[in-house]
Image 1 (cartoon, helix red, strand yellow):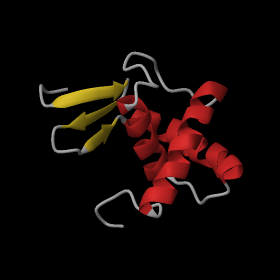
Image 2 (cartoon, rainbow, N blue to C red):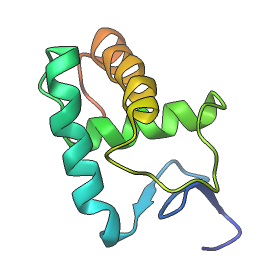
Image 3 (cartoon, rainbow, N blue to C red):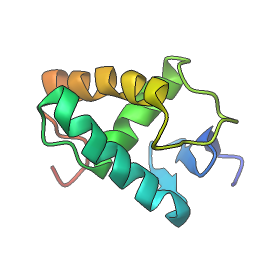
Image 4 (cartoon, rainbow, N blue to C red):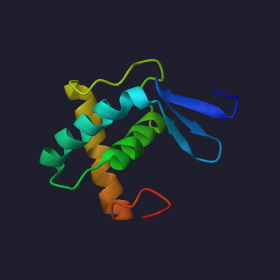
Length: 99
């Protein structure tokens, strides 16, 4: 991780320009979280939505930069659920440059 990178949680960092970097080892965790969040949010959640929700939760002080993400963490799911709903309400679910 370079000086221009801010660690959000272990394996996820964001550059000063807003570009997120995700360690490949987190792919399954992010995918599992997306599947888990579809039910309670009643929204078409994908990995990019989960990543955006993680960044928002971190910026709100709800996630520790030292605590690893776990897909079987109900507290994490509850935190991310609120942020996923915000992403869809405020941005229509669009989170990337390609959206």
